[in-house]
Image 1: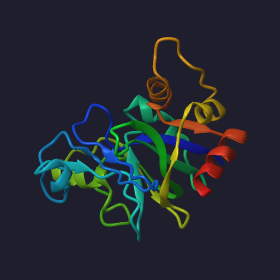
Image 2 (image 1 turned 135 degrees about the vertical axis):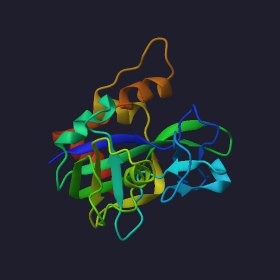
Image 3 (image 1 turned 180 degrees about the vertical axis):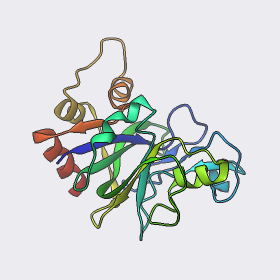
Length: 210
């Protein structure tokens, strides 16, 4: 078994930011799609107006999912090794009421099933609400993406867990960089999905269950 650390949601390059409240609660905002909206894609007017959004992960019951381009995108290559029983933990950039932004753990998906290398419409199934499926059905572009189905332990955390230098050092062996800020250094080490095993996996699973 393994745990994967995946960076999701809006980042510093976007005009909107995921808000972090004083009590640790938060709202994870999705990135916009690069193609115009068309059914069955999703819109989030209060954040992105008429633009289509990439609502991924979508951890809402009854069929929570996460998708990625594990075959084509280098940042997601490690997820090709993911299987039932593994855990995908989501890391996101959140901004507090003072305008300070930092990375936090925000949720987890325990893998129950995998739709691998989607090159054509698989028909109706548990994957229907996933952003990759929605985009492919709207554009007819099936580009070998993967979709992971979450089991009963899948959840969005009630309170975000700060992901600072000490945590990054313990999980990833990361060290401070002489010319980068802490957040820049952590971001550079978490841009690609990381696969963790052994003590690092146990620590990551523990952070998400506390």
